[in-house]
Image (tube, rainbow, N blue to C red; front, side, top):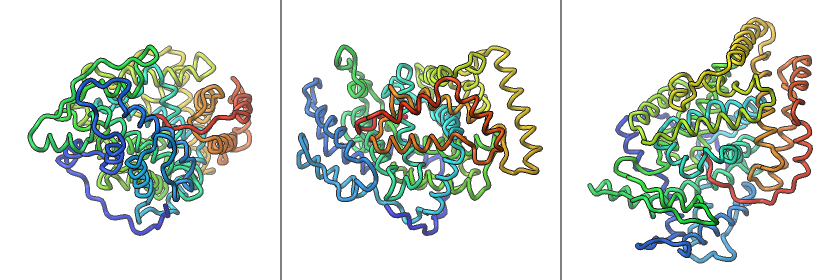
Length: 494
């Protein structure tokens, strides 16, 4: 887990043929781990008594032991329901997957952590007004997200699951021995493998080899198994059906790499569009940190980018490829609307409730807005207020920053939206992030430090304080400190 910092290997632009091939490649390490654990699914109808369901539950319970990166050292799978095959598979996975690449640079990672934390609540609002919306653009990826999470009904839960990975990764030391980011990412990686195994009823590698040999790999849809009166998520995945020949593997390498771009490149692009772009060295440090995360997630090095120009080109190509393969019915508008409604409901004033959608249109552009169905008219007063504030703030920033380079009213106002979103959704007392208790407490402590912008003058911080005290921000965080959340397994994340 040590970041050595040797020279990053030069990356060549991946060809379209290579991208197409990546649709039939997934994650051999994680996929083999789950194949060894679950074994062969029954050839006949699969009922609730199939042993695979108990094995999935056991693995999910073992996740709770991965509380931080240090807990991975010497960890062994043991306990009720753990047989020799499961123990051997999980032990090999943990020992192998936690090792960072020699090119991982601790100094760049630390700089990326500081960038995320310095911008505080703004970092969160960019993730949820830009990164996640762009993540939903690729139809095949959205189709899996729609099935795995029923995001339309549980948007807040999926948002919190994403935050449960991002916070530990970007907190100070998150990818080092003293942090918890590696442990959280390894959980998500194995969940991706579980999703693939469930959808394909077995090993993704077997399905890919079948296609490469000229055969067909089609999983017919099945009636979902009812659990407690409604289909459980894992059973829904198993019953959804899949066509590997036409769709590639679910959660394949291209889709994983595309998601990585939304967390790294799209985040930085949004900073630029708000007029608070970072120096080139800082941007490349941020991309580097997410490349390290990508390696831990099992993403092929050839699908990573080291510069913003490379990120722009690769994102555009992947989106064009995805849009050329539409899915019917299109799940993207429902996903986009659910995400917008979740953010709207976190804001206390009616006039600003359309701001998340307006911000998403501005940060992501018209094509993404149309993909997600974010084209409905908004109240004229809200639109007028949004554009007047944004244009005026950017104009003032441009002038004042000639004297004070770190000054930004845009950053301050966006942070206000972020505060309300975090207090109502991410830091809710009744719906806590799925993190171990100690780590959750650390996240609370970090969020408390975001009350002031270190680069803003005192009067601007006082204005932020007045705006963010509306609606129970301070009261909610104080209640959260008293929360006792038992450590649990991370659930599937977008």
